[in-house]
Image (cartoon, rainbow, N blue to C red; front, side, top):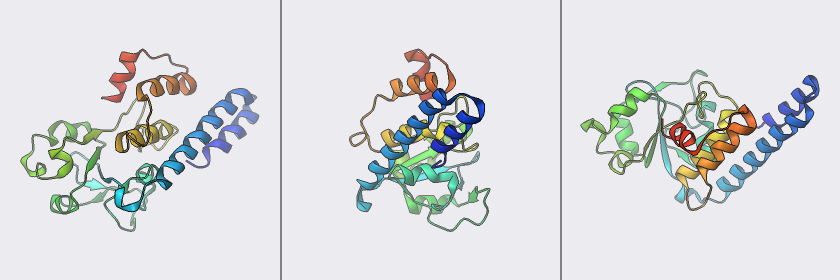
Length: 201
């Protein structure tokens, strides 16, 4: 993700679109700096514990060293699954008992099927994030904002996650940010209602 600002400028020169590329590069730079500043401002003891739930059962995840979960640490969160990645593809299997022991404050969900059933599953209900209804399905339009594929949508995903974890520290009108991002990067004009629907898939 750190390479995006220069990558946009390079592509702008190659494609003869330097003005547009400059705008995309500037947005990328600002976002990365905002996230670095936010993360640096949060003491270790105040970092929100996050579990990244992948797969239809929510029991695949990523080590804290995995690039697939890069946004968690980038915005000052604490990926609770601390380990060395064994496979660059990720999707480390984990037991529900281990998730219960971790007791995350927030759960980020990749699979819509798991999200639909997590609150109704009694096995998950002892976890703080589920008790407090802090389980969130990651937005996925036009494709995932977090991972799989790891794309420029992570720039918006970083802002979404920062606002989700630290709304008092990172104050932003996320609906307006979605509209601005889609206009700048995708040349799409969203209504407020459309942006809200994208935020809550």
